[in-house]
Every structure is written in C-alpha cells, then in structure tokens.
Image 1 (cartoon, rainbow, N blue to C red):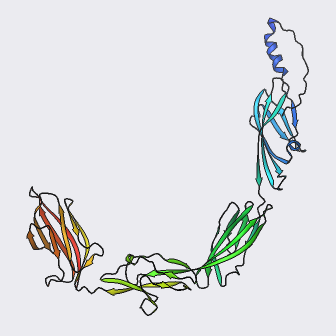
Image 2 (cartoon, helix red, strand yellow; image 1 turned 135 degrees about the horizontal axis):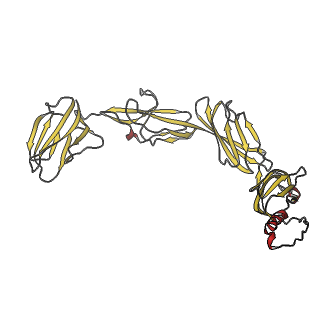
Image 3 (cartoon, rainbow, N blue to C red; image 1 turned 180 degrees about the horizontal axis):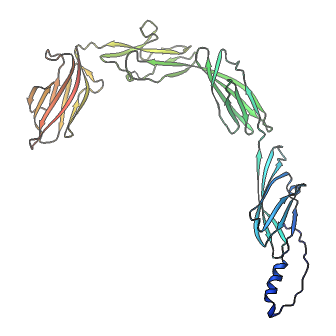
Length: 391
C-alpha cells in the first residue's frame, strides 16, 4: 500500500570546495522524521488491533491509535517489516478470527514513509462449547465410567470428570462418535456409543445412543502352570472354545477339558465345546487327568561342553515312559562313557543311550545322566542331562 507523501521544504545551497563539511551536515539535516497513518482496521475489516511490532524500530516505529488505525513514524532511512495482529469476524460463519498482516515499510533519505502489505494470514477460532453427560440410563445398573474415547478428537474431545460424569467439548464442525466404557453391577464391561453432530456455532447434538455389554471368559490353570489370555464375548452370544490348551501344563498330567468349578462340580466342557448364550462373566478351570504310563521320566535340563551336544527324542512334552539321548559330536570323538549319578552304566562306542525309568535300579526323584568322550588328542569332554523320575 503506497502512502501519501508529505512534501518537505526545498533548500537551495551553493557549494564551494571549502564547504565539504558543511555539505555533509546539510545533507544530514535534510532527513526529517515523517508520520504516516494507515487505516488498517477499515482496509481489512478488522474488529481491533491487538499488537503491532516493528522488526527494526531504529528505522521506523509503529503505534496503534484509539480509532483502530496505525501510525508509522520514520526514524532513519532503510527498509524493515512491521507485523500487525488483529481480531476479526468470519463473515460466513460468524467465528472469531485472528489476522496477522506483514507490511514492508521503507523510509527514504528525506524521511518519507511508504508501506506495502506483503502477507496476510487468517486463523478461525472455533466457538467451543461443552456439554456434560451425567446420566447413563440407557444401561441398567451402570455403576462407573472407566474410559471415554472420541473417534475424532478434532471434532469432539472427551474427558472423564472426578464425579464420574463425562464432558464433551466441540472442536470443529462435523459428525463423530464417542464411546464411554464402564462397568455394571455384575462387573461386566459396558460400551455406550453416542453419535454426535457439531454445528457451526459449536453446539453439540446427540443424535443416537447404543450400547453393548461384554462378558469376559477367563481360563484358570487350576493347579497347573502357564497363561491363556481371556476372551471377550458380547453378552448372550455363543462361544466355541478355541483356547490353546497347550499353554497350560501340569507335571505328570494331561488336560482333558474345562469345568466352571475348580473342583469339577460345575458344568463340564470338552476342549472345543460350544457354550451357548454366554450370559455373564465366566471362569473355565482346567480339568487334569493323571498320566497312566507307569514310571515316567521328565527331562529338566540339558547342556555340556561346546564341542558336543545332546539331542533327545521327546521334546514336547518332555515327559515319557523312556528317554532316548543321542550325542552329536565332532569327528574324532571316541570312547563314549555313559554314567547315571556318577556310576558307569555303558562303556562302548555307541553315541546313543536309552534311559529306562522302569528299571529296578532307578528310584523316583532326580537323576543326572552324564556322557564323557575323548577326542583325538586325548582330551576329555562331558555333558549332563538332569531328569526327574516319577514312580
């Protein structure tokens, strides 16, 4: 924007060679600070100017007048920028706006000020409004809110208040859903879904409400070991048991099914039965049956020197009626010597040993099976397996 110039007085001077210093002083005296007024508010439909800052006040200063205009006052020749922040109103939606205008301001040698707009940025301020959901009558016996989540927080933001209510704050126009999660008196998970619309003025309207009650099926090892993740089922829907029962284990036992009571007095299910109409939270306890193999051996641990290594024939489960152990060794190993609890039981060139727990010489409890071998250089190496025998 070009400003109207204020004409200065014209000074005529006669210069001589002896008047150089006088010339310099006269040229300096020619600069005369000028003040130009810019009708910013009128030009850009602004409500009010909140801030005006000169990047270099040693070139030009700026002030905001009571009538909403700006006054630029030259200080010295040069070019700088002035940033103006103002409030305005969105003409279409009526929203408050923050407007930032950048001017390039030039002061010439005589102090005249010219001003040109170089950029303008407008940011709408959405008229946020908040409503509170304090009643959850859609769900019988709804007792507490644990979480409230918005599908789109750029439209509506949620907050769970200390008193158990839920606040919804509008952030922009549009439609979205929020889900309130809580518990009912049966400690079942309840999910209430609200469909919302946010109007131009920030008003939130609840268009519809729906809810889902979810039952949790928990798996208990019932004296065994391991963990199986719980399953969540919509209330009154059927569920076909698909839990990975191999994640549970119990020494010398096999899992054969499930029961709703830990002592087996409840409803029994097979490992893959279908439970019709799950109507509440449910715990399924593992049903164990003792193995009928007679004496059994369980491999507890195995390890040895880096030059040799054990393999065995029954990795899953580690319990069986006998245990076959095989040596994997480098070429040149010989003199395979097998020991049970330090007593030599086999001394030959075989690299395989079968441990039979039914032998009268093997008692119940822990035993160490040790293999000793000799390499081509006469060095001895050993490895040991620890087993448990049940009789």
